[in-house]
Length: 376
Image 1: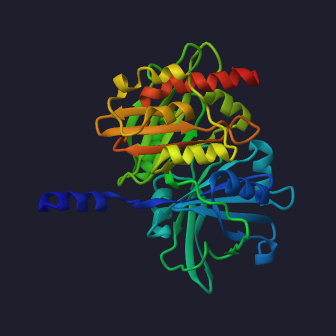
Image 2: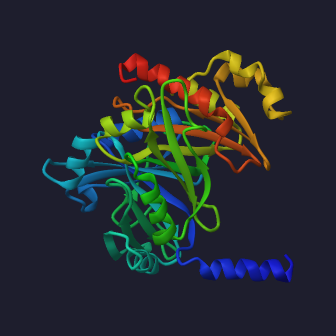
């Protein structure tokens, strides 16, 4: 690296008051954590990691942590009614509560964000056991969603204090999922710019891409979206809000059934999307399907790609290109009975964007599902 580039990198690092190392884990509040963990092991190829509950001294909840490569999910269920976790599940159904971010210093992360206006969820809190210590803090973002800051450089255990290693005889093979690429939030009418400002001012993110209703619309519905990224690009949070259309958009449907703002989908990276999606499909994961005519003009639209188009067409995988390369992506149907949370599987071949060229085909596929539910 040249001296000039090194200096620029140093300045950027010094200016970043909230240096993030990536996503530590995603925690879901669910009605039955034991069954949810089993589903994600079976369908998505996660492995058992850690458990917390009455047997580990946690009396009000049960939590199961599962892992695949750098991807960690935690499922938490309340053991009784009349508490915040139970109220969350009753109101929203199963959904994302915590987007936990890895940091070097959880105390500094909390201090820097709260002094810039963040509403505190958890003051810095040190947890210890025989394997070391974890420092955790947290702030609220849109809806009831929380960003936790996790400092675990002095911890050697399976997951964190309060958990014990979870050994299981049932460990399905992985499906090739690697890490969280991005997490998308749905916010209410005219709320997107408020949350863009929050991420810019409170967390030091920047708006790297914007899409309006001219970019993301069909005959019936539209939405607007802005992509927020932290300084090193390890953490990206696109934010969606509804836009006026003839009928109800997917964001409006989400807000209605989730009963508020929240995380719409989590994008999971893979190094081989054909193998991953084939494995997921064979384990029962259902995906949105676009018309096969989408593939007729694929090469003329995106240029030459490394992959054979035939399996992409069979699986329904979408392709888009930007100035830096291309990406392949596909979206599951909602994984809950409520039409709320779903997942994106993405493979990047240089592209830094989010599939703008696929929006119309994707949204028409979502609308077909909405129509079947009577919610369009």
